[in-house]
Image 1 (cartoon, rainbow, N blue to C red):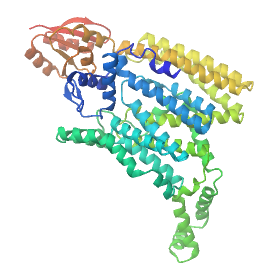
Image 2 (cartoon, rainbow, N blue to C red; image 1 turned 180 degrees about the horizontal axis):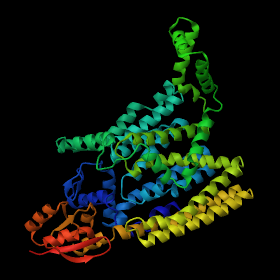
Image 3 (cartoon, rainbow, N blue to C red; image 1 turned 90 degrees about the vertical axis):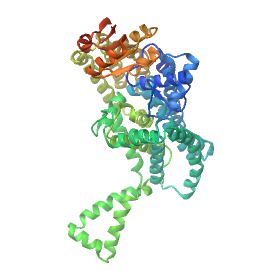
Image 4 (cartoon, rainbow, N blue to C red; image 1 turned 90 degrees about the horizontal axis):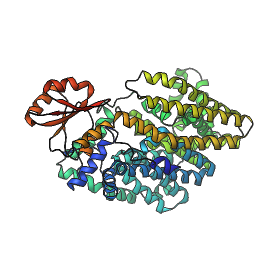
Length: 565
């Protein structure tokens, strides 16, 4: 099912702009020019991400030709492997049922499967980052150096995919986890940090050094300072979002399973701290401070020489030393703590960033899937019929509401295609029927059967509807662009792209395009070129026609025009 979801009809629709064009076209130009160090977009140097994904796309072009399937295949393979890796990790430490649930959750999460079928860097980053964390945990538990070195190799690949964040987040996650588990000197020694640093440096550092050297430091200023530091501290490319942006993205991207997320997190926290005398003593110390009297009297006690004051000081500092409360964790609780820390660190880190994009928190999805699947397994083990009933009924109401309201809401969206409305209505009606049927089964205490039907039917529905959904969206918003570009590819006349951000156009044209975003600039450029073509939105047709362009063809959203001097 993972193979079907990620690979079925993968190349049957054109590139989504601007995201996929920003990577698919540099890979094509890399293959054409033979320049494998510095990446270019529209034949202009582009200092953004490291080139690992673009290298992989260029290799796929050599194998499958320059097309949409080849552009997306590496990212789809990454999503496929990450699903299998998540299953294997959960199966090892939490059991086969949790593992199957976790894999199904990933395969039915809209953001996860949607990004996995796109030619962008976020799914490979998620594979390398989550894979490295799983490897580190497995190495720590099994005391096997081979898995440790694999973790360092995957970390280096993450750096070569998206830069320093691929190294920073695993460090913070591992450090936090080992601190909470009161790691000993022997544990720290086991991780062989000098060897790990050497592995990461040998894989990732050479390209950065070469690139910074041949660009005379320009890459450092543009990528390290702008794409990392500036993007984190300020708005870059209008990608601004509120502080809760990524929390909302996680809930939407994991739907419908995100309905269970708050309860699942509470369950993990309870499991971790329920049997910890150390943690309970910390809570009691807080209340003892509050019962000790006024703030003034507490302050006097703290600064006095009495043993009571010293005890209070120690109790305050003991609250910070959380490690003692987790040092005796065993079995599932260790895995759940590790997954919870991974998810929280990733979501919190990107929430702090001023510039935000939808797929940033994707590396947290495997950890969140494990947490949610464990909660669902608890429902079955403990025979919590009521919990499954509530969840299935909630899903039924949500999907029923979507079936009723989506057609009305989409009519208010500008240019929403009728096929999209019909597709959403059909999917919502199907899911309403499935969840109601599972609710009925759970009512009669068939918890395992209802769970099996729920998970499997949602996976199958995703496999059926997702390619249709992507095809409809792409056909309406993108399909005219490649048709126009291909139709003039044999002509030697230049092409101007006017007031559109469509970096995928050179991918279909096979050569450089001229970008213009101003009417006066367009007029000046046109007079300089003489005979040329122009692609623009239909709402800018009047501006182009005033300059002297003639419409060659136009459809729903875009138009192809020609100019002859």
